[in-house]
Length: 117
Image (tube, rainbow, N blue to C red; front, side, top):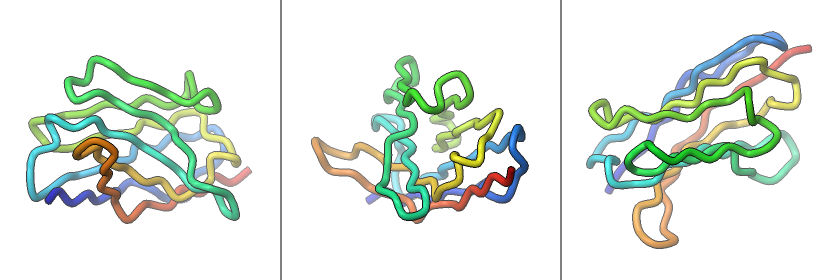
């Protein structure tokens, strides 16, 4: 069973950047589609970005399009989310997940991102 650990969150001023990492252990994620979600305070979890197992296909939600980039390094068993031009509305707990089988998903524990105005 794969385990996922997110890191890289923190407090940043509006307009700043952060790079989140999602490190996998237990088995390779090279054959899994991978995604980032976020959950803002008091709101439901929402999709942010996804990447195919080969890395050639990426999908980014409209609110972050042009500012966030998802990438993966299968050799390091890690997926990244580069976040630029951050806004206060990007404040959330950010989670990664792995599409392990059909509709089955494995989630990490999340990392907090806080953007101050």
